[in-house]
Structures are given as structure tokens and as C-alpha cells.
Length: 164
Image (cartoon, rainbow, N blue to C red; front, side):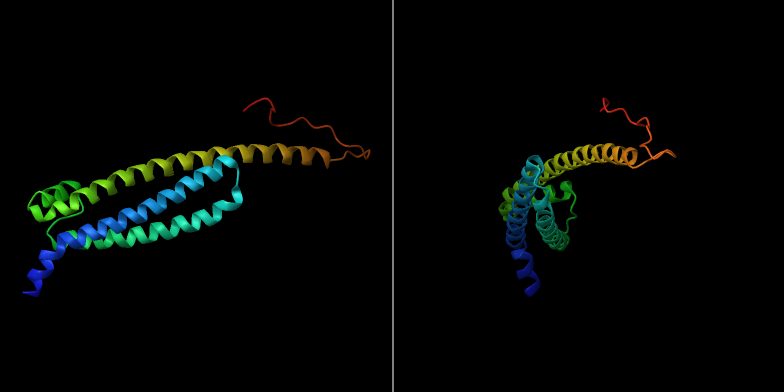
């Protein structure tokens, strides 16, 4: 009988789990938005703290996702979208899960897109920084090279300053 009680509570438990997962994903999205703002503003010092917060949120999301997978398995479904849709359509008891699951999917898409956009920003800024560093290293190399007569040796740059 206890097994039947657990099975009867599965939709409610899954709905609660989905709500917690959604709240955690909203927090992760907040960190992603803060990261984007810091990247745009050039506030590199805050990125390490934001990365730590994101990492913690993602670790919790992983735990919640594992718990969701276990509950779905207990209900006879895999994490595949088609199985979940079939499960939710199998009984009115599962209606309580539809909204939270739809919200979770929408937030996951938003988080994915924002994470991709932040990655592009980071790569662009890294490329600019590497180019600036190459110019500075080249200038430093030229300034510190002296010929046999003790005068600074004139070297031609290996990189055109006019190229991007």
C-alpha cells in the first residue's frame, strides 16, 4: 500500500521538484544577466564571483535534474520530451506538472541563448585583448633590442597596426 501512496504522490512531488528547478534556473539566469552586464561594462573583477554563483546554481540544477529523472523513471517515463508529454497526458493527475514543465523548458532555452551570447562576448574580448597584448609585446621587443653600436635596432613590425 505504501508503494501505491508514493505512486499517487508522484505528480505532486514532480510538480514541486519542477518548481524548485524553475526557481534555481531563474537564479542562474540572474547570474547570466549580471555576467553580461559586467562583460559589457568591462568589470572583469566581478566575473570570478559571478562564475562561482553560476557554478553553484548549475550544480544544484544537476541534482534537481537527476531527481526529476528518477521520479520520471518511477512513473515509467524517460527524460525524453515525447515520454514526458505522454505521461502528462495519461491522467488528469499529471496536469499539475504541465505548467511548471513548460516554464522550465522556456527558461532553459533562455539560459542557453544567454550563455551562448555571453560566450561570444567573452571570445570577442579575449581576441581584442590578445591582439593588444601582441602589439605591446612587439613594441617592447623593439624597444629593448639594441644593435652592436648600442643604439636601438630598427625592426619592422611583423603585424600591421592597420589590420583588424
